[in-house]
Length: 157
Image (cartoon, rainbow, N blue to C red):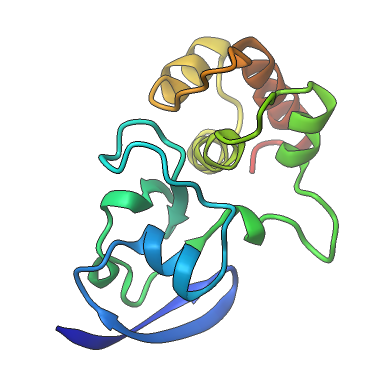
Protein backbone atom coordinates (compact mmCIF):
# COMPACT_ATOMS: atom_id res chain seq x y z
CA UNK A 1 0.00 0.00 0.00
CA UNK A 2 1.33 3.41 -0.94
CA UNK A 3 1.80 6.06 1.67
CA UNK A 4 3.72 9.28 2.00
CA UNK A 5 7.12 8.75 3.62
CA UNK A 6 8.94 11.90 4.72
CA UNK A 7 12.60 11.82 5.70
CA UNK A 8 15.80 13.80 5.29
CA UNK A 9 18.00 12.70 2.41
CA UNK A 10 21.56 13.97 2.21
CA UNK A 11 20.66 16.97 4.33
CA UNK A 12 17.49 17.92 2.44
CA UNK A 13 13.86 17.17 3.16
CA UNK A 14 12.36 14.40 1.03
CA UNK A 15 8.82 13.16 0.78
CA UNK A 16 7.67 10.36 -1.49
CA UNK A 17 4.48 8.46 -2.06
CA UNK A 18 5.69 4.86 -2.17
CA UNK A 19 4.81 1.38 -1.06
CA UNK A 20 5.97 1.53 2.57
CA UNK A 21 7.35 -2.02 2.35
CA UNK A 22 9.50 -1.23 -0.69
CA UNK A 23 13.21 -1.46 0.01
CA UNK A 24 15.12 1.80 0.40
CA UNK A 25 17.75 0.66 -2.11
CA UNK A 26 15.24 0.60 -4.97
CA UNK A 27 13.76 3.96 -4.05
CA UNK A 28 17.23 5.52 -3.94
CA UNK A 29 18.34 4.04 -7.25
CA UNK A 30 15.19 4.06 -9.36
CA UNK A 31 12.93 6.72 -7.92
CA UNK A 32 15.58 9.24 -6.89
CA UNK A 33 18.40 8.44 -9.36
CA UNK A 34 21.03 8.04 -6.63
CA UNK A 35 22.94 5.16 -8.18
CA UNK A 36 25.98 5.29 -5.89
CA UNK A 37 24.26 2.84 -3.57
CA UNK A 38 24.77 -0.56 -5.20
CA UNK A 39 22.82 -3.80 -5.34
CA UNK A 40 24.95 -6.77 -4.33
CA UNK A 41 23.32 -9.74 -2.69
CA UNK A 42 19.84 -8.44 -1.87
CA UNK A 43 20.05 -10.08 1.55
CA UNK A 44 22.03 -7.51 3.57
CA UNK A 45 25.15 -9.67 3.63
CA UNK A 46 27.66 -8.05 1.25
CA UNK A 47 27.46 -4.37 2.23
CA UNK A 48 27.33 -2.90 -1.28
CA UNK A 49 24.07 -1.13 -0.43
CA UNK A 50 25.19 0.45 2.85
CA UNK A 51 23.83 3.90 3.73
CA UNK A 52 23.69 5.84 6.98
CA UNK A 53 20.30 6.08 8.70
CA UNK A 54 20.24 8.47 11.65
CA UNK A 55 23.93 7.95 12.34
CA UNK A 56 24.07 4.18 11.86
CA UNK A 57 25.27 2.10 8.91
CA UNK A 58 22.32 0.14 7.47
CA UNK A 59 21.85 -2.23 4.54
CA UNK A 60 19.36 -0.51 2.26
CA UNK A 61 18.48 -3.68 0.35
CA UNK A 62 16.67 -5.04 3.41
CA UNK A 63 15.43 -1.76 4.89
CA UNK A 64 11.80 -0.96 4.16
CA UNK A 65 10.83 2.62 3.44
CA UNK A 66 8.60 2.77 6.50
CA UNK A 67 11.75 2.30 8.62
CA UNK A 68 13.24 5.61 7.39
CA UNK A 69 10.15 7.75 8.01
CA UNK A 70 11.23 10.83 9.94
CA UNK A 71 14.91 9.80 9.90
CA UNK A 72 18.08 11.15 8.29
CA UNK A 73 19.45 9.12 5.39
CA UNK A 74 22.90 9.76 3.96
CA UNK A 75 24.14 8.11 0.78
CA UNK A 76 27.58 8.25 -0.82
CA UNK A 77 26.34 11.23 -2.84
CA UNK A 78 25.72 13.10 0.41
CA UNK A 79 29.23 12.85 1.85
CA UNK A 80 30.92 15.45 -0.32
CA UNK A 81 30.37 19.07 0.73
CA UNK A 82 30.34 21.93 -1.78
CA UNK A 83 32.05 19.73 -4.35
CA UNK A 84 34.81 18.79 -1.89
CA UNK A 85 35.26 15.09 -1.19
CA UNK A 86 34.87 13.94 2.40
CA UNK A 87 38.22 13.07 4.08
CA UNK A 88 37.24 9.40 3.95
CA UNK A 89 36.65 9.59 0.21
CA UNK A 90 39.98 11.37 -0.23
CA UNK A 91 41.77 8.68 1.78
CA UNK A 92 40.23 5.92 -0.38
CA UNK A 93 41.55 7.68 -3.48
CA UNK A 94 44.97 8.31 -1.93
CA UNK A 95 45.40 4.68 -0.86
CA UNK A 96 43.93 3.31 -4.10
CA UNK A 97 41.48 1.46 -1.88
CA UNK A 98 39.41 0.28 -4.80
CA UNK A 99 39.83 -1.63 -7.97
CA UNK A 100 36.62 -2.16 -9.84
CA UNK A 101 34.92 0.33 -7.50
CA UNK A 102 31.64 -1.54 -7.18
CA UNK A 103 31.90 -2.12 -3.43
CA UNK A 104 33.52 1.25 -2.73
CA UNK A 105 30.40 3.29 -1.89
CA UNK A 106 29.24 0.65 0.59
CA UNK A 107 32.74 0.37 2.05
CA UNK A 108 32.98 4.13 2.51
CA UNK A 109 29.53 4.40 4.05
CA UNK A 110 30.17 1.52 6.46
CA UNK A 111 33.52 3.09 7.42
CA UNK A 112 31.77 6.44 7.87
CA UNK A 113 29.29 4.75 10.21
CA UNK A 114 32.20 3.37 12.22
CA UNK A 115 33.88 6.77 12.48
CA UNK A 116 30.62 8.36 13.61
CA UNK A 117 30.53 6.06 16.63
CA UNK A 118 34.27 5.55 17.12
CA UNK A 119 36.36 8.45 15.76
CA UNK A 120 39.66 6.74 16.61
CA UNK A 121 39.24 3.01 15.99
CA UNK A 122 42.13 0.61 16.34
CA UNK A 123 43.23 -1.44 13.36
CA UNK A 124 41.49 -4.49 14.80
CA UNK A 125 38.26 -2.52 15.35
CA UNK A 126 38.35 -1.35 11.72
CA UNK A 127 38.89 -4.89 10.47
CA UNK A 128 36.11 -6.27 12.65
CA UNK A 129 33.68 -3.52 11.64
CA UNK A 130 34.43 -3.86 7.93
CA UNK A 131 34.29 -7.65 7.94
CA UNK A 132 30.73 -7.68 6.61
CA UNK A 133 31.58 -5.62 3.52
CA UNK A 134 32.82 -7.81 0.70
CA UNK A 135 35.37 -6.85 -1.94
CA UNK A 136 36.06 -9.39 -4.64
CA UNK A 137 39.09 -7.46 -5.92
CA UNK A 138 41.07 -7.95 -2.72
CA UNK A 139 41.69 -4.31 -1.79
CA UNK A 140 41.02 -4.99 1.90
CA UNK A 141 44.44 -3.92 3.19
CA UNK A 142 44.28 -0.62 1.31
CA UNK A 143 40.73 -0.09 2.58
CA UNK A 144 41.90 -0.52 6.18
CA UNK A 145 44.79 1.87 5.54
CA UNK A 146 42.43 4.45 4.05
CA UNK A 147 40.13 4.29 7.06
CA UNK A 148 43.09 4.65 9.42
CA UNK A 149 44.30 7.69 7.49
CA UNK A 150 40.85 9.32 7.49
CA UNK A 151 40.48 8.74 11.22
CA UNK A 152 43.87 10.31 11.89
CA UNK A 153 43.29 13.32 9.67
CA UNK A 154 39.70 14.14 10.44
CA UNK A 155 39.42 12.89 13.96
CA UNK A 156 36.69 10.58 12.74
CA UNK A 157 33.71 11.31 10.56
